[in-house]
Image 1 (cartoon, rainbow, N blue to C red):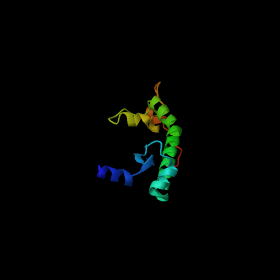
Image 2 (image 1 turned 90 degrees about the horizontal axis):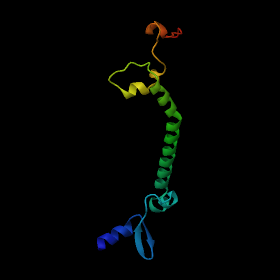
Image 3 (image 1 turned 60 degrees about the vertical axis):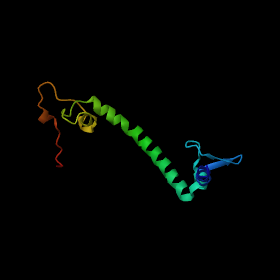
Length: 111
């Protein structure tokens, strides 16, 4: 029992009514993390939150290209499966009506 009490006294807990209670994971604010671990820990979690927001925004902005790429049938179907159909190389459709696929490419002259 003394070991458990020592663990609670020296851990990230909140003392209420003389009893040390564990902090809840989702309800602990970043400012309270500063009290537990200092400024560096607070800055780390602020940076982590900002990166999470950044990646969510980037995913939302780039997800339409994946959707439109999967609608095309230009890339050859290979063993890659989903990755090939989700790339921008799959935009468009295969030539129909007697046009050879090799003549469909446009070479501008900068190669």
